Length: 521
Image (cartoon, rainbow, N blue to C red; front, side, top):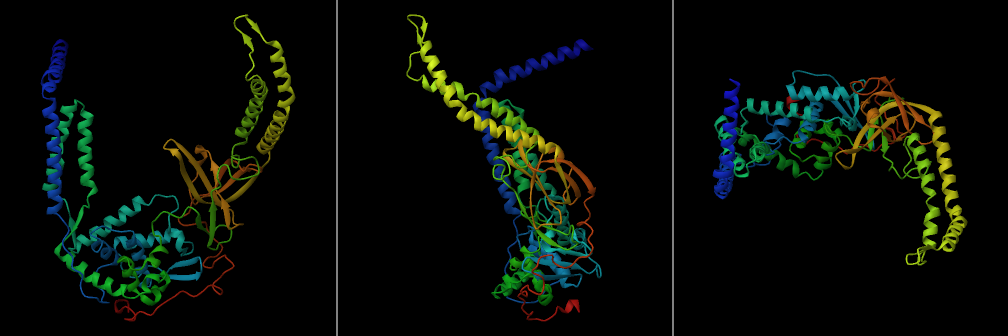
């Protein structure tokens, strides 16, 4: 049996060698041509599929202020060429506020609050998702609007769930449908194996054929997989009439989110229709947070803004450049290495003195000892002026580093930012952590080694053991887990900044020309 398998394997190997050396070599150019033709043919097939499944034409209806039955998120989908935009989540939160499930208050030039009032009635799945998201960021049912951004946490999973729920709702209403039905998808994916197989034979590299197939499938995935129905196009045209009407109001695009108190659901639909940018910007639901602005309640129990600085590795003192937040052990090693390198000043100065001097007489086989002695004497005279300051600085660094190892302070606070930044390539990163200790409104992001960085989660309350001089984080101890929103406060709902509601300018609000939404009465 083993002999039979061995003979079959040998025969198969000989057959493949013949195929490569005889058949394919002689058919090399035709195969390349066939692979190119098959690739072009597949692209033509893809173009035909895209044309056959194109989006329906949408004709904007007459300007109107009438609202339809579709929720703002669905409106955003069908009026954005059946692609859900980021405004949909913000529009949903504004709609919840218009339906009296939340209040949005502008209490200062840099602070607006969302105050959750509880669910009233029945919410669909993505409305409940937005409400739960806001509740997870809140403290005592209150959250600063900028705190709705999710720090460094990737919102991809949340957004995917939200998007799928909105699309499912639009399909259930007959406004949307899958673009790629079974036959089209089977034809396109199956057809990609023809240029892929021919490419593999032409190059005699299965990886090349696989790359062609993967590239074809990536092209399919990159095309919007959702398309509208006739009913969806009709509804989209009706909502575009509302967009036209709202755009005619010059001040509508400047309305803050707090104006939902006056404009009711019209502001939510304006956000969905991309005509209320000021309101959308102020409600970053599910979006990445601003690296340099964080919101926290730690230490005071009151929402306050923390400005985060990321000092450059060479731009902060105490200590010479590049030493802030560095390990004292690394600094001590640098001090010793610099001291050793400083000794090179002696041979360097002696060598410069010997430029143009014939030191070795190759014909006579002698060395100019007098020139060497003179150069070395000059080096001994001049080098100490260079070496001594370097040694003094290195000695000071060494003393500071060794002192920093044993002289530490402990800082307790909440982690408000964790960031990993590339230093120029994918294998070299700089890890940063900033905390709010409740005592200042500005903080600096320390450098962390990757092992410490991996142990910390944004939102946790931690104790950090720091060197007093170079501010290097030696140890991080978790005090409390990251809560659903932020750390438990003594009270909430008022700004910490000295500019409180009394001194803050009132938000610019305009009356809703239609009055309150009758659907909410």
